[in-house]
Length: 98
Image (cartoon, rainbow, N blue to C red):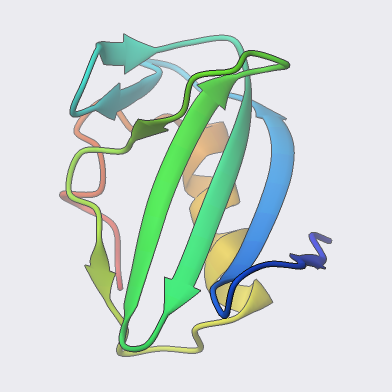
């Protein structure tokens, strides 16, 4: 389970995972596949969801991010997102329950 990362008032959760079939659609570079790190940043009533190739420097926002929070904004939400990435998110967060 991901632990919150220290920061600037924003709660961040990160997990290493392999993206599922179809990869994950991002706003900046299109589909990302393979080993990735997923980051969920919770700030106020929104959760920004980003992804990067494992051990890369660049982060990309998953298409459809940020999410408005209507569920638990903590580790449970992050784990739901991680599971969705494992299943593949070729449409980004369009079909994700927020």
